[in-house]
Length: 428
Image 1: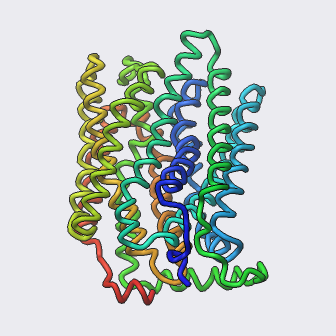
Image 2: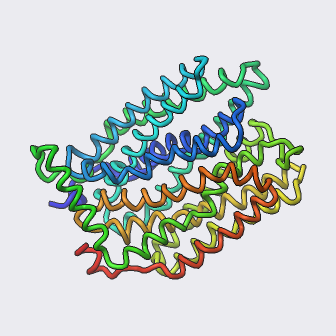
Image 3: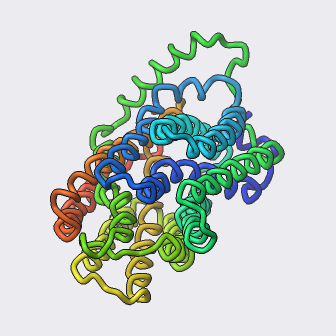
C-alpha cells in the first residue's frame, strides 16, 4: 500500500511547520551567524570563511541519507533532530558568555548544522513520500514560503531584536545574541512537540528489523542508481550553477548593508536591517514563492524553468545599484532590497521542483533528493567561503560587478536543462 494512500493529517497542518523548522536553523547557521560575528568584531573575510564552511553538513549529507531512507521512519529523524537542535541552541547561548566563545560557538554551530542537515533529509522525505506529484507542485509555493518565513524571521525581527537589546536596553552584543539563541531553542522545541502530533511518518522502512550494516549496501545502491539516471551530468550542472550568483550575495549582501560608508557600505544598524528583511522583504519573498509555485503547478516546470532562473539572477543588479549609488534614503534602500527578495522568492521555486521532480523520483527518492541538495549546498559553500576575501580584495563596488557577471551562466545553463520523460522517472 503506498504511503500516499495512508490516512494522514491535512498538509496545511504539517507542511508549513515542517519547512519553517527546516529553514530556521539552516539560516541561523549559514546567514544569521554572519551578522552575529559581524557585531562581535570578526572581519568580513573570516566571517565568510567560517560561515561558508558551515555549509559542509548540507554538502555531505548524501553520505548518510540512505540510512535515513531505510532505518525507522522519516518522522523519527525529524523529531530527533529538532530536539537535538533545542539542545545545541541552548548550549550556544551559554557559550557566548565564555572567554573562548569563538571556537565554542563555531563548534556548536557545526553540531547544529549536522542536525539540521539530517532533519532536511528526513523532512524532504516526508514531503515526497506523503504527497503525489501534483500535490507537491501545488504545495511547492507553501513549502518555499514557510522555509523562508523561518529565514526572514531569523534575519528580520530577530536581528532587529538584537539592535533593540543593544541600542535601547543597553545589553552588550554578546548578551543580545544570547537572547536570540534562546529564542531559536524555544522555536525548535515548539516545532518538535507540534510534529509529535501532526507529522506523517513518510516512507516506513522496508524491513523494520534490518541490520544497520545493510544500510551501507543500500547506500552503495543509491549512489550507483543516482549516477545512472539519464543525462545526470547536465542535470547536476544545472543544480550546481542555479544559485551561483546568489552564493556570493548571501553573506556579503547583509555585510555590505552593515559596513560603514567609509569602506563603501551603507552603514545600516541591526534594527534597520531587520526591519527591511522582516517587513517588505518578507512580504515580497512570500509573494514570489507563492506565485512561482502556482505558475509551476499550472503550466508545468518545463515551460517556466528559464523564466524562474531569470527571475532569481537578474535582481542581483539591485546590489550593484546600491554599491554604486550608496543611497541614504531608507525608502530607496528598502525598495531596492524588496525587489531583490521578490525575484529570489519567485526563482527559488524552480530549483526545488527540479530536484524534487526530475532527480528524486525512483526507488531511493529521499536519498536522491538529498544528493541533489548536497550539490546545491556545495555551490553555496564554495562561493560563500571565498566571497569575503574576494570582497575585501575588490571592494564593494567591483565585487557586485563580479556578482552580475557570474549571474549570467545560471540562466544559460537553465536553458539547456534536460527534463526526463515519465517512464524514465519511474524506472530510475
